[in-house]
Image (tube, one colour):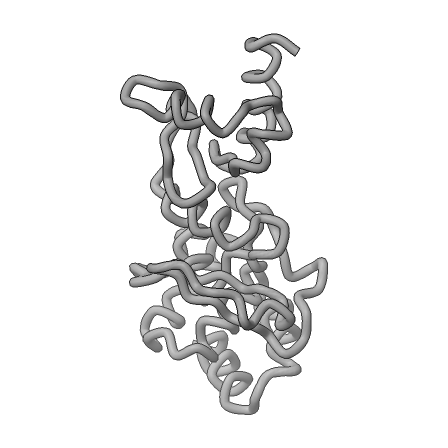
Length: 198
């Protein structure tokens, strides 16, 4: 495989990961670690983002680069953007998360949390219908995002804004939101009912 082919393979991998690649993925595409360090120098094709993580310099940046980097560092095969970070991706409410919120399966609860990240471990695993792709990142559904944020203590006015914006923009319906709230605590259900009734 020549150099051009290696970059094409790496580009395809990065495209599905907001421009990011891990050292392991780059090695699978045919790059040696020394070559990665070389390409991460000033003016090179790569930018070193964190331990074992690079970003293609020519890949268009987005306002959610820090979310994508945290998702990759946490493990792109297991992490899902959730809670206030998901509200931000959907552009619901005015919340500005102080950390990147990611949901991981419970069996990973001993994993070290990267700086600036908060892990959540739901009791029940996320169902297929609980996850969507938003800005290229796996993200909890609108309904799940609102309910998770409410349960985690996001400011009530932000939850109220998120509910009204989600319904107004037809990202969800009152019926779907009420159905998703069914298994939640009574306080969560009553809050959703009150907000939908306003």
